[in-house]
Length: 220
Image (cartoon, rainbow, N blue to C red):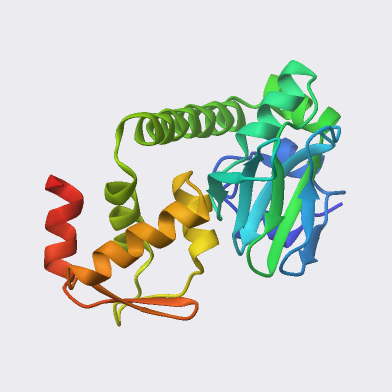
């Protein structure tokens, strides 16, 4: 059986030997529409997802319904929730959904563990990505705990702005990204607008003075 063509379009392309490709031969890629829910808290971990195109967001949901973006999964990245679930035999504690139309391949749990045991390059890929994810989550925790909301918001606007200095996001989406409440973000956006850094429109923020906003994000 020949290996599926998705392998050559994935982060696994240069690390799998013939045996590894043969093991993955039964695994097929799937196309998922935007807003498809991949898992929710309490769901059992079915396998290890390899994202081939698109972006998946993983969110922590609070008791009152507030959520915070833990991380995005794009091609070449992995889901630490899935890795923890397979290795630790735990259910998901977060929610993931497709932020865009996506293509992904799901490696079943048993096959993932077999590859982990017998393929050094695959093992290096999994644990290297796992370590990077944990570092990113530590940085997120540090930001939420110690960095002022307006500084986190300014950094988020700079990161999301396109080539035309436009940020297409609602106040709620920005609040979810930086781990705050929508009402707080709305007030902080108004304050940034009054300082002449940005202009607010419905569902959109325009960076008027990007250099000043950058200086504010770096120096407060």
